[in-house]
Length: 134
Image 1: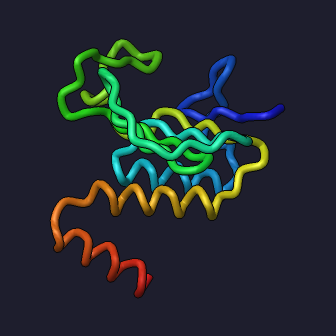
Image 2: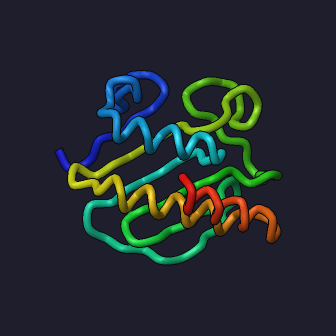
Image 3: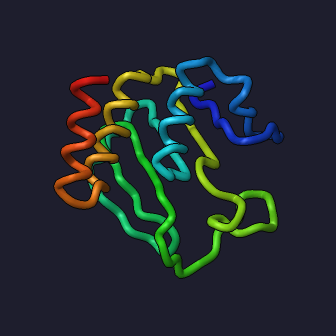
């Protein structure tokens, strides 16, 4: 198997995040705390760009892609449930990881994304302070 897909509950194609190794659950929790909806870690292909679709903003660095719903999406998005994303269907929905995932590299990309999305000098200073003294 070249990839594993984790979600909030088990389906035919998705494993419940509760059954994942602790390191993968840590990725999920950090991403969820930042309001990220989808994280994808590829096996080989590197991407380094920002994308903007009808629903998501995409941040791509090396093998990691991070997707966060726009504040005003043009199209509502549903993950299995009939409730649109952003109502009571918030936070992380999908974590797709390659079987050769480097969790530390992935966490570093998520940290870079947090810094990229921080608004204002106070937020940047808080993040830098937390990184130095954490």
